[in-house]
Image 1 (tube, rainbow over the protein chains, first blue to last red):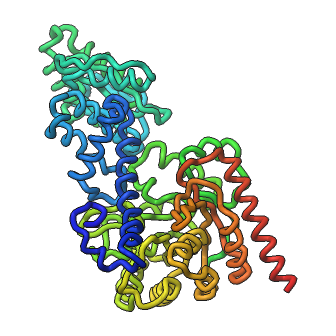
Image 2: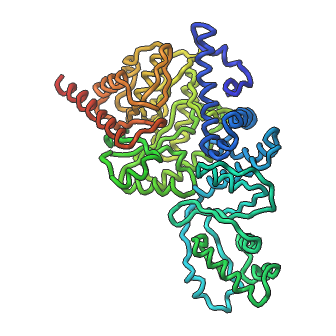
Image 3: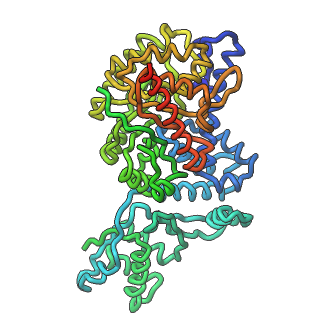
Length: 248
Length: 278
């Protein structure tokens, strides 16, 4: 391991070979394979980041990340778990805040892709509950559900690259929340969330009951319509298939 | 000790999921890479279970790191056990190698020194894993590009002794024998002659890249003639062994791989017929 990481070369003396040149050439097969494999993992898991950085930028990132974060997992699926943090804290990448958020979004898509399975509940199971019990209703969500908050236009950049279009210029903005989930056909979907729905969904994911969600929504809705507004949000969540249990 | 043979299989690859489910191709079984399915759910698990409903599955791992001096990764083994319980594979395999040390993973199949000490170490760890999994393991020979000055015996002697002491089975990679034979200048026939017929449960075939003074196990092209030749020699020696073709890169359309598997059937029939004729 130390050899392929260029940490030390003490193993060289233990290699049976006809010459120093022969020994070095054979060992380099392992060194090259190590770097090619890890570089490939970054490229496969972060295709949009790779395109956005361009060839030179990507190679610089791959080399720096491989040197800084040797794999500590049995599966390459998790090799890039530290990548968003690495981009956030290491120059020159940290000078471009959008890079870390783009990497974070791509990792989140992977988490959604292979999150646990669970059957969605139909809306009828909610409407059949007597109104008197509604205040204490709590929802449990599909394991794939994730909330993503960006302060850069990282999702727009991701979307443009995915569509083989020129990405927009990176722009810092007000925080924008996104709901990301896996749908009935096991395809990943995402949509932006307004501030009120983001607050409601955050509360619901934290186990806050219907009455509590309504109360927190008074920041955005008048008391006379708040319950209806929350009900409309719940309807969207059920329709998307992200509610898997209704606890009373 | 040996499990019943199951014919001719292919590796289960994401590029082919849809084709397999739509066409139910004439393949006897599929080999799934264990680590690809050690996830909570989603498409990988869905397709694995759908394929399992139609075909026998064997599980093939790359991360057991049975030769490492790190403690056995019990969390990995527990995940493997959970996958085994889910899939009910015909058998489970991994490699005679180490993949990491001190908690760092190379994601490569690193060779071992062929010593008595290493035999003890590896065989003991295989026995522990088999105890946890409650089933025999198949252990596969790897390709190598270096050998160690510490080695006291030949690779095949090491392999045969580890398997005998651990009382496990062999997944014999014919391409790896060829690759290592070229890289270390030994006769691949000597390798085959040094193995116990009754331990050989499965065969891997794959393509390699010939760089003249060394050969690399790339799995990115067709099985070469010299490997087919060695495959026929192996079957004449060992009889019919469940055989699969490994393709991990530059993956062609399913029907191309299926045609190559049919070629394996022809080579096997020819080799086994020759045995009958003699």
